[in-house]
Image (cartoon, rainbow, N blue to C red):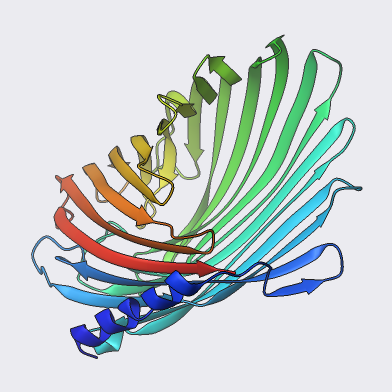
Length: 386
């Protein structure tokens, strides 16, 4: 498929956007169920489609995401739920053998009671990634299935105290190139006790236990246990600053004498500053332990700073930069310094359509063999929800 055909597909949506004026969902079932069409298309240019430091290949990719969204709501019972399903279609301009289709499912629900609040979520994503993105050697595309599930409950003990806990499940499974790549299935249970310092701010003390089962083809499976003891705060921390932060002590204890236990300062924070009526600034901080694509222990430190600016009622801009430092141990040791930065300009003619264009710069400055790369990505996108 030629490049001008890609552009034609996207530009042909513009007349529909200008004429769209839908007043109701696609389907209304009774008083509590609304079904929407939720789809998008993106045309992307990669300067380094394999994310490889030696084999840099330019490529155009067309991605189409037709999908549906169902919303269920009953205000009388305090229950809300939303289910989204999208089918991703990828088409490459020259690398035809990489064309593929992938499924994405996401569901969230909540229940607000007098003293008990419950939140649940589930997602399943089929992803096409690369050896470069996954931090292993080679110039290949890899299919990856990621499943996440969460059930969280918050119970009000008294006017000043509340208790929160959840069960989290994550599963990372590589569908091809099994050699050297590590599947990871993990469970975590955080427990937090909150004290209302003021009507707007809660203090917290918490503990989180995690268990990870790591499987590598041709290698004996092993597991890891980790803990996070922390203190923190949440709510409207300052007149224009809201969010939460947790700071504490993280430990990880892997199975086997050849793998070493470790400990570090743990951080988990998401803060939003309403700088002006049109400008919103957000900061996300994270420091902890993860599992690399080859089963290594990774100490992760990252910071993401993002700015959202409302230019007018129809135009918005986004600017972000994310810096990450990853320290790999127990196999293919070394350090990665990752920079992800970019911007996006969006046009919203009405509540149903969104058109946007953006640029992303991704760099991995690594001292590990064959892991460094630079990639420039340009894209133009259109999305419709009605």
